[in-house]
Amino acid sequence: MEGDNSMSAIATAHYGMMAAMRRFEASAQATARGGDYVREAVEQISAKQAFKASAAVLRTADEMLGMVLDLKS
Image: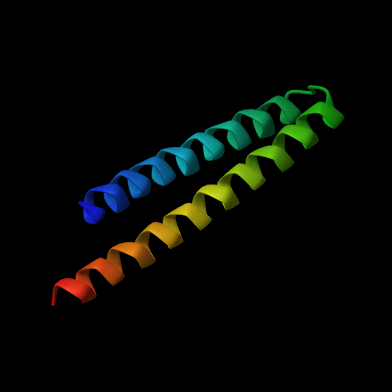
């Protein structure tokens, strides 16, 4: 049961990281096209923080899964 939760957290973190990367890329492209620099800078910072948060969830889920596997062995 714990392994299922870790796997769900890993999938969620992966999705969050991919979404953050898409947001960052879209904002970078908007900046390159001459979009509002300040708004896009804020969006890029926000996307970077979202990516970091998802990466932290991924690390924690990986550690949890490792602990569960250690307990089962």
